[in-house]
Image (cartoon, rainbow, N blue to C red):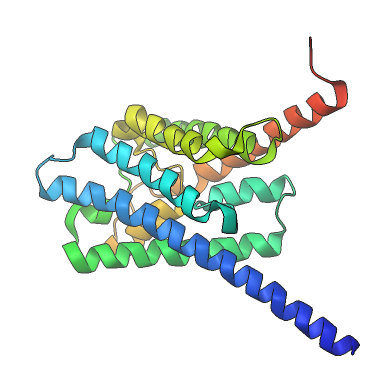
Length: 238
């Protein structure tokens, strides 16, 4: 009886991880397919979408995917966000690895679909900085810091209005892409940049996008957790 109960628990646990992984895979597929697709189609249409359109596409698809999958997986859609939740003990290392595997798979699948549709146009939406590497590195750290700060506020703080979380997060992505996209590419998401790099072979300055978002997200998660804990310990200032 004990063995049966243990086995049943394991099955349930794996099923839960499977649904979470599937939701994350679909969510980041939508993000990368729409976002990188907008970059590719803007190039092929000679600027019909425009930089503003690309920025809004990223923001809107993030909003839509959070509404669609947030209640299943939390809609991280970003390995840097998952790391932020892990370093603040909202997520175990084991679950972090499951999230990362699902996110990577979804991002690769999205770029592969774009490659089948459009060939290698626009380097498949690869993130390409126009400033210096250090300038883009600093921007990506700061951008991801504020994105994660907003996510921590709406996802972990009981005082925030969680029903507005998708709009707040999507708006943050769009805002940051609007004003820094022409310089750093405003990736804020390592797998959003890694997938096009892998399938297009464009590796110039990709180290920026595989390091800076993780640093920014971890710093923001730790800082917001400290602020939240300090507030609950000392009470609200009147």
